[in-house]
Length: 149
Ligand code: SF4
Image (tube, rainbow, N blue to C red; front, side):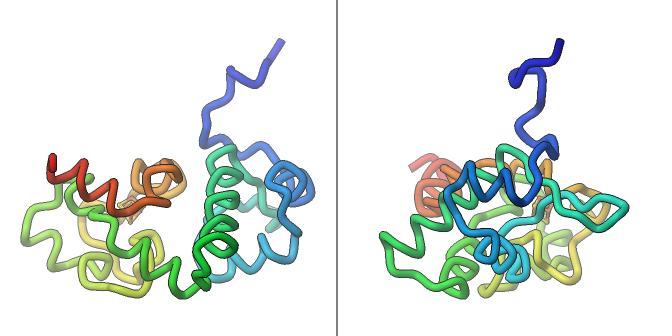
């Protein structure tokens, strides 16, 4: 018998209604987060969204940014754009310069229209850069960890 622990944290498990309940966030707000690229839930062949446990955690983090820190969605995207994905993915200088995520200050790397060679065939939904909401709701903490300072 499956229990919750047999699923990976990135597995698409929940419908929009369930994700809404688990995150205590209205469905229309979650749809807005998707439209703005803050979360990237799985899409079924019938174009329905399915959310992972990580997606639910990210929704909760976004709510905190909006409510407690007074950011708007554009501000959250800008904040997430400073996460040093190139260091996490060990892109060399040449690879960085081929990637829009390295240059953008307006959106998280998974929203980049032209990804560099390291990420072109990656599934962002299961990437380290996407899956640690606690870390990335605090980009400064992430940079400290990256720079060991
Ligand atoms: S795979 Fe996607 S989420 Fe991961 S670093 Fe590349 S663009 Fe960002």
